[in-house]
Image (cartoon, rainbow, N blue to C red; front, side, top):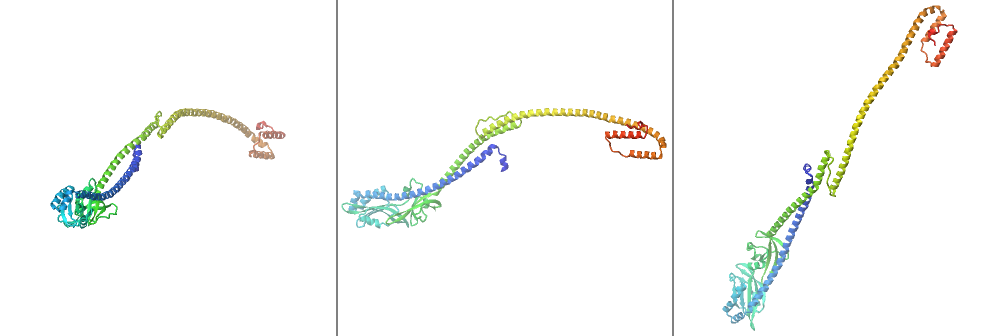
Length: 473
């Protein structure tokens, strides 16, 4: 990692940390935003399911009002009253069958006050069905207007009819009119029209109507209506589900509001895809902007580096042309000051070098002069020494010559002297010779002169001649 980092140029070193931080924050923001949106979306869908369940429950009550209005409209027909009053079944059918077809009734029944059935018209398939209509029939024959849900047993399967009754009167109670409409798939499709929700009606865990074709034959337990929106699996599909109950005096059933989770998953995938595209777009923008920023930062630094290298190569005339007031501009101005100082120092060093060369030449000449002077002084010294040595040597040579002459003369006079001396004088003579051969203390010039005078006086008193011959002076 460090090796790769060392091989990166300046702009890459600037932009990579910037991109790492920005993209990391961007990714984190995308994930947080995505999970927040998906959770909010799921919660909104749950809320929509609950709101739609309330609306569907209101639609059932509204349909009760509609069928009550329709039965009132039919019951107020004069032709119907006359047919009931005459107990003319053919006339009743002539009046009711067109209205049944137009208004979409699945069941029409007319009873008299005694409870006798005047007409009982049903849609195809209901002819053999058992309708539990005792309560509604009694209400009709006693002159009560009433809406209710009644149970139906149809081919061994349960069903539910939405029914309404209307008393038929003409100065007296003539009978009662009962109409009904099955709670079936078409009714649920009418309620769910324009919505992504599905509806399913249950009686005793059996489906009596649904907008989900795959769930027509399933058996399932309806969730508690008091619970909030839940998840359930129906026909190998996952749904959000909210249930509510519809109750009548003769029948009750549950209605399930279903929302396919697959739609939510598609929405989530679309959301994540859009967020991914947003990340790619944002990452591209951040990369381009970061690269531009890195180049803007690195460009003057690289220019300064190039100029510095030129200065290091010996070109003292290079200068940085920077007018910015940022740190790079300050660095450029400091570089220019340094270059000026280095140019001045270079000139000074050149002068110092020239002076050093001049000094070296002077020192060299000085050494040569000193050597010449030393040789000259040495010659004079040798000449002086030779003169000083030759002078004593000449004196010594002359003294030696005098000593030899005196010694030769003394040796010539010594035998006669020894013969002329008495034994006593001869003894003194040899004693004097011994004394003369002993080392003497060094006498000063004054003491030496005093000694010589004393010696001369003594010798004169002894009447010894030839004093000059002994070199006593």
